[in-house]
Image (cartoon, rainbow, N blue to C red; front, side, top):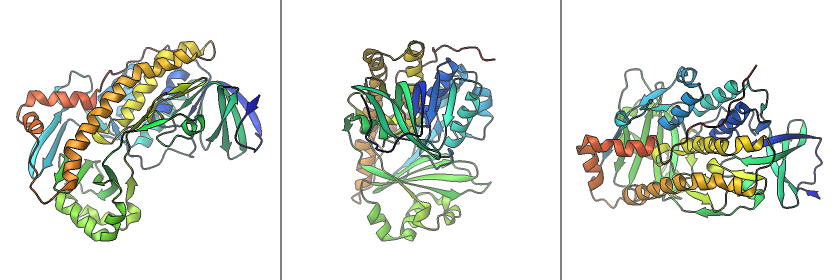
Length: 418
């Protein structure tokens, strides 16, 4: 017997082979790949558009390689973006080089800074040529449809009422606060993070240039991204200290920002209130089990990443590529088995765990110590001193950040389009 936890009847029912919940990087990339393979797939995005201030605007070489393999790279790189190769930082006043992507053996040895809405819109437009792919905006999954112990689709809320979307496979790509994951009762292992991030923009004059990426001082840390016509800023605070920061007042915060990054002295005027600042709550977690019959979780719905390294978007894309590689052909014949769904986790869990382990090391050994402050001068850790002093070592962190553990390549089929 079918059952849902919603008492509101559906105004209509539709059936698809695969329903992807969430139009972020994982969902849009997977939708594109399955549409490319001729799978009848629908992507549900609860917002009316992609125009929001995402935390993840970095497109790494691993993702650029995927775009190349799909034949999309030329058009993609025509979109406005900035490129970063060398990652420099100030650690207690000492300049260090954290990574040098030019040392990578990669076709695209740089990080592209691009608003995530441009990335997602590009994938949506590129996917319009696939008749089997449909992206439904303003469509929010609110519950799951169950046939006994099997997930058989989702119930969604639209501007025209409730719709039941029955699917052989439902894939949750709806982020770290996944509704689908919660409705499915999948348990999350919290790993923790010692910090949160204040995310804001500062004005940028044409003659302002600075290649510093991170700034760390006793009790303070900040990251700045040169976005051409504005500075994107991430001011790191100790976990749970946002109320204390607000209690000190906006001007005290902005004074700290300008002391750390004098290049922002003029542009900081763009921050007029705490309403111009977004609190990003940092979490590292992962599911113990990514799938149950008829359902698979990938991307942030399966594993929330720290902002360390800016790798979240790219891991989500890698998950999508692996999922299509493993399941696209099987989906042409119906619902994948539990073992076939678990194969995605077996493929992707190791890179996730390795990346999260490295993020925890950075958080605990560098960020946490810096945020505790204590009035003592900061010393550059020995490892960072070695990396900065020996250029040939700078390719190692560059590879971890830019390529990652077990990068994926597109092997899923492509069905000819008319």
